[in-house]
Amino acid sequence: RKEERLKRKQRQLAISIILSLPLLYTMLAHMPFDIGLPMPHLLMNPWFQLLLATPVQFYIGGPFYVGAYRALRNKSANMDVLVALGTSAAYFYSLYEAFRTLGNPEYMPRLYFETSAVLITLVLVGKYFEDLAKGRTTEAISKLLSLQAKEATVIRNGEERKVPLEEVVIGDTILVKPGEKIPVDGTVIAGASSVDESMITGESIPVDKKEGDYVIGATMNTNGVLTIRAEKVGKDTALANIIKIVEEAQGSKAPIQRMADTISGIFVPIVVGIAVVAFIIWYFFVAPGDLAKALEVAIAVLVIACPCALGLATPTSIMVGTGKGAEQGILFKGGEYLEGTHKINAVLLDKTGTVTKGKPEVTDVLQFQENMLDYAVSAESASEHPLAHAIVEYGKKQAISIKPLEHFSAITGHGIEAVIDGKSILIGTRKLMKERSVEISVHEDKMVELEKQGKTVMLVAIDGQLAGIIAVADTVKESSKEAIQTLKQMGIEVYMVTGDNKRTAEAIANQVHIDHVYAEVLPEDKAKIVEELQKQGKRVAMVGDGINDAPALAKADIG
Image (cartoon, rainbow, N blue to C red; front, side):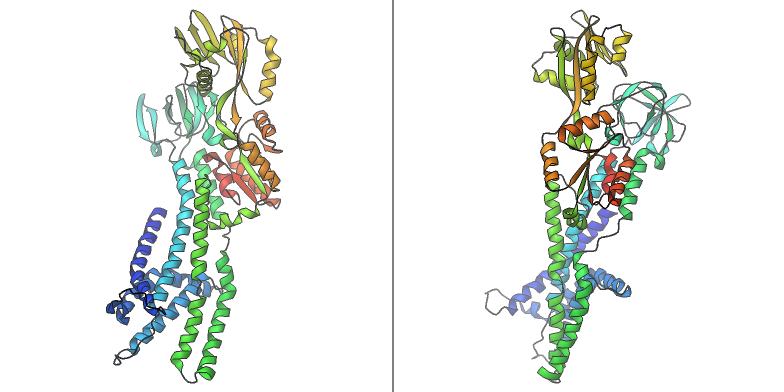
């Protein structure tokens, strides 16, 4: 619907420009010097000008009359009142002048049709620019929402069937294969896998899921097959709830009145007053009894006062501002938010993808056996897990050549096992090492130290002996520390919010010198934190990069 409305405005603007350009051309005839351009007699015909100006005045300019009527009914005066008043004055005076030519072909009418038509067109250009800027954020959210699963593999009567997402009902058994999106919220009833929940929680490293664990719709199943029981479908899913919170937050905001309207509230009565005074002075003192001259002077006051500059300059500056912002990856929902940026005194940063890079990287490698890294990189090359990808990428940078695998198997939730050059390779968690009777207690202190820094520790064993430790983490962006320092120098308080665990969150916050941290926060609670800060009298800007941040982005003064 928004696209249709924008296209309709585009069509109206095109019509308005086409009809106004000939009238604009006639203004050249009023220049105090000869510009040498031909002036067709038809363009100077008052009835032809009336034909061009009328659709612009009443069809294209209709919304200004509606807006003016509503404002006057509420005993206020906004920019619509000024536009309607100024253009109507110019139009109806020109109409009066056109009628004076009837039966008096020698009479040279003073026409202002071009003033009314061009004025409406210019204000319309401004309003179109503003709508164009407002549409950008909505489009960005729509693209994120389109990432959800479109269909689901449902098991009914012992048969697998692909059905549209809308047809999934509570209690359905759903099969989710590796690389597929989980269609709805539910509980795992069979299988085990790692699920990438970053879209919802902001947690960059996939979460292991097994029988009895809860999964969220729109998250990505990475490496195993899961059978889930649908528990929340349609409007009840976590994703639908996020959308609802966004809509409520957007709807609950009091619209910040445009500066032009605020001025107009005082300006309109003053202008009308001046026009009336000018009419009286001219009619009774300057040119006694000359009604036409007095009317012309009064109309001149109204037309000159018409806020053509405000109507075009404000939206144009907003368009330029939002355009420059978009180039830097900043989307403004509307002009009022752009205007409000200078009042911000608190910035809430999402961790994953905003402060950090949003994908795991190898940060530490401890080798207790020669060639440990060669074997680890080779073994992980067969795995689909994001942590495995991080190790393989690190191996490429170290110019490690991949050895052929004689055997490989993924142990969901624990790690992998492989056979290379006849050696048995195990990579995974403490639990996996204990199950395979690998002694790890000697290096426990090193593991704990790395985990305190918010890193995920993977242990590598070769032929039953601990051969090394590889630590992986979502690392901080190179620009984050400098950006946060700049914000602090501007007197803005910086907060970090994340769905990630407290230990990881605090480790990242320490690296970039953020003093206030909110960890293990759900998407809907991020919006509550914004509200809390606003209640403390702060003007809050929220910076996030995912659908999980949408409610907070919508709730913040600037999102």
